Length: 231
Image 1 (tube, rainbow, N blue to C red):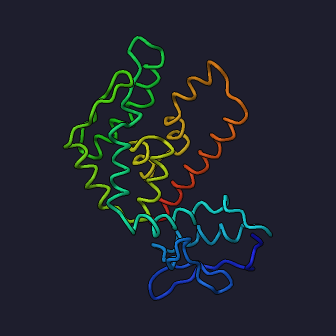
Image 2 (cartoon, rainbow, N blue to C red):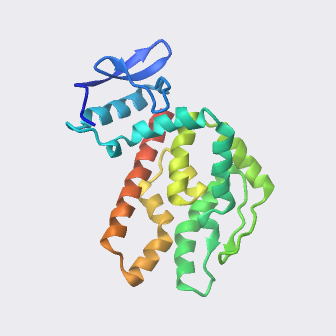
Image 3 (cartoon, one colour):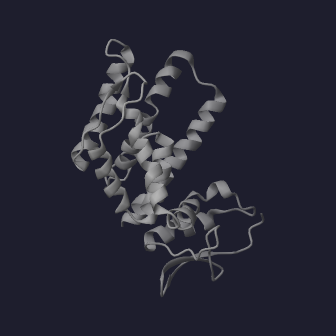
């Protein structure tokens, strides 16, 4: 699609913050008026629209996509989104470890255990650690506390968390990414620990490397979006 506007601007309306293209308010892809949580988030979206070239590239609008997801999906059925996020906790990657006599186990302990312990301390819960890949249910008390935490989040934070958890295959990593002092690079590397372990032994092809970088960019964009929402 050709660029159909000259300038994107942040506008404060009676109902909240908007992005306007040549004075016309942007709507979500689902048709909702795009009312944003604060000025910081509106600035992020406006910058994306301004950065577009003569041809609009949808891949350059990750903040727009997150805002649309918040209004078109999360706001329409928040309970379903919370339930989907809880499934990442039920099978969280960080809980499944190699056998202690395997070299991979030591790296998992070094990188994953601090993240898991920090989440437990923040949320007041306990995760089951599992040796191997056989599923072991997490305690209902832990899942109940996580459910309450997710239900208290606004639509925009839940949209960002959905991207973070899905890319990391871990609600623990996703929640850690919402912390104000979170290190996105370190969290992304932790989420990809096992993949990197295999790459060290067998190498990585160019296509896999390109996919990883795209996913990493989406992860970091979701972090930036969540931080803007929290301001």
